[in-house]
Image 1 (cartoon, rainbow, N blue to C red):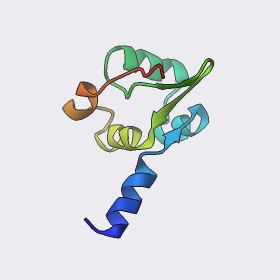
Image 2: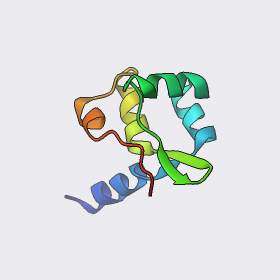
Image 3: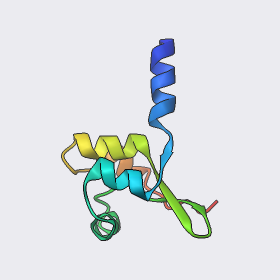
Image 4: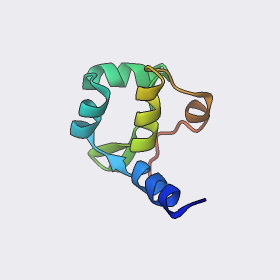
Length: 82
């Protein structure tokens, strides 16, 4: 694995908040929530009592797949609480 690959994967795994998620996916908050409940959108990660985020890598995979989740993302689906 090259240094570029390691750096690129670290950048891809950062957490994005709602404003950036909307820019990346171009869908509303309510639509994302509905798709998440159907396991058709990446699961939120709980960051605090009133804040959530998404892994950038999972959002990018969702966008590049045309709005479909791969088995890898749905198998690792989670709503982390800590």
